[in-house]
Amino acid sequence: MDHPLLLEEGKAIRDPVWGYIHFPAPLLALVDTEDFQRLRNITQLGYVHLVYPGARHSRFEHSLGVFHLAKQFLVRLLRSDPPLQLEDEDIRVFLAATLLHDVGHYPFSHTLEELRSFFVGHERRARLLIEDPKGSLYPVLRDQLQVDPVRVANVIDYHARDREIPPRDLLLANILSGTLDPDKVDYLLRDSLFCGVPFGESVNRDRLIASIKFDPHNKRLAITSKGVSAVEALVFTNYLMYRNVYWHHAVRSATAMCKRAVQDLLVHPDCQLQISDFHRVTEGELVMTLRQEQERLGLEGSAQLLAGTISRRLHKVGSFIYPGERKEGLMSFLSDLYQNPEKRRAKEIELCQLFGQLLGRPLQGHEILIDIPRFDKSPEVDLKVFYGQHVPSEKPDPLSFDEPEVSRLRESLLSNFEDQAKIFRIFCSDDPELRALLEQQVKRHLN
Image (cartoon, rainbow, N blue to C red):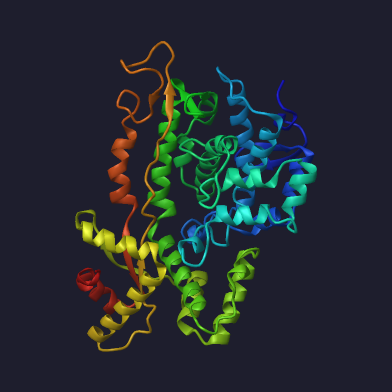
């Protein structure tokens, strides 16, 4: 018999991607908390709506979708041969974690997290919210769902460096996060739908879920051979979404402008904002707070950048770094700028001073922005495939997804992702003279 929390019973919420999603009372109580309801006003895709106007969906409905999918994944795993062995509390911990996996998100999606010297990752923020006895989540987890909030936080923040995560919590974390996980499946299909792009339509969601099984040796989710083509469609959709949506040049421009506007505020010696001021606010509240502080400090450049993201007066592409130009020394330099936002800001100011001299007129220091996508982002396919009696190889069952006998998709996508999606750009204000000069000369100064 299925666990009562896995049954399609309880309050039904209509979702545009998955239809009706059912919430038993203890989990509905989590949805009704103040911290979870805040996600209604945290957009899923940040500045993507500047390119795809329909992309106004929020972290709230995405979290509902992840919960729904996680229930389906778990039912498959518990019925697997051999089955995943979980205790009653494990199931309650896992379902709570699926709902709360994004509860620590800052406004504007992942934008602020790229200011690594100021903001911890949203997983760490989720832990702090979940483990706060005075917060809205802790009493619901402890008293109504009857789970240890620390375990829920462990499943979400499983990369925490300051603690050892117990094996049972790591097992649950590996189901929530991986090549094939409820988070990734929901956001790819949901983002595709709301952006109005057809990429997610190629994923056979029913076949995907039906192929899920438990890998007892590696203690993680795997698939049967019948799900290979569905996973290939998911991986390809991920590539297309990064190339056309998530890392669209206008989205990256707005993201770079927002980061620099916030950074200019936070480094000002008289700034009264605390990092905690970013924690529990919505996007509208944060914009109002930033504008007030910019006006108080007289930070015209920061104010212009933030205003540009609102009115879509975005910086233009001044120069690209092409794949053939990505030599070891340059990539090491860019990696250092990515890891250290203060160095990136200093380089941007230095470039503004230099090109202001070349133009014969001063620049304010924010007209040139360096955009560096995540260095560690690439097509990830860490998945085992079970064939049973008909293994297409002399190797033992299961096979790794990226072995040539299974699929060559990741091999072919890897170079495409690095060359066509992960593009390093130098943005500049809408100044034709500056833009032309950047295109000609900026690369020689990137060191």
